[in-house]
Length: 454
Image (cartoon, rainbow, N blue to C red; front, side):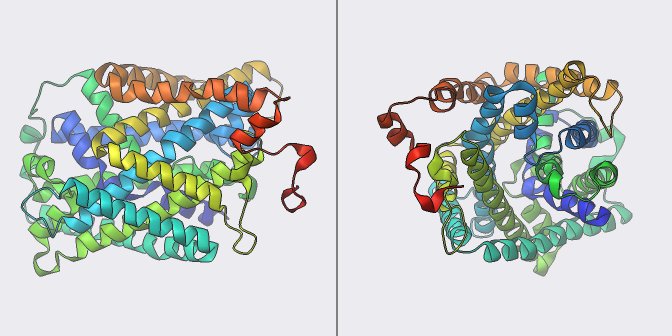
């Protein structure tokens, strides 16, 4: 239904990123005013991308999002590289960032005047990941119930921040938002730093293309995809902008940058004896976010394995619980490795760069597909200026991000390209010796156990 499409979009875009990204956006933007402009423009860029994905969603009516579209347009190799980067980079890194945020918000009240110890944050994050992996392995019903309950905590935290912030502004507490102070830069602005500010903001907006992963299940996608975009993206942009305005109504830029848990600092300053509500609400929100990403990432591994792009073991499910346990264990293991070696700020730049790279390749595919199949029926056809505008911004953003953070962003490209030899050995090479099948965990068609035959 239309309302379900809108609510799905809202719930998947509004995640724990808004409790993580404000500090990174302000740090790179250099001023309050420019950071707010980045948040508003970030929503506009998501709207452009969403319109392109709406056209792709009804032109290539397959669930699976970027992976399905790129495989259809460019062939197996490019589709495999997107899948490879999602399994090795996007989902594990996003899970690691949210898990670290969870542990920071839980531990912040305990370590009020100092940074929580490195070992404590990693240990608590790992326990959280392991527990939720166990839940997802045990029961799909438990996993979905956790998601429903903890979505309420997320909305409660944001609603509380916005209402309290607006009350502060009505009382005249908005010095940091006055134009004379809002554009006082702590550093000389540069295009490279602004590009990194957009990468930080884009982490909070990730999820805007979720409906494209379930296109086949959307009723009347020709009407409901655009409707969901036109309602949800402006609403999310408004919520995020108001949340940041609320932060600045109670904190100076210096206080926000010094905080490891922005919403906790906000609560301590304004909620008094009820300040405990904020860390609990955000911790519950991030807990639900981890559960949601584990649920979807394991399904992506499962889908890729079923299509023959990942080891066959990952396509196996538990007979009784009907859960993809091998895929969940791979996601869990990759996440724990990444959170033990990465720092939140750099991890966001890392995953946002790869996310933007995949978005750009997909939208470039839209233009190529129009040239390749000009007579194909397109129930939705956006102006050619929309994908071109997005790709111009995309090229500038990625170019300057790579220039500003060559190691962090370059590492993502290197890991993505390692998928090329894997594709040719594991997917393209059809007549592999039996020893190779045993190494990669695949089964030859003639020796599949009857239990796992399709």
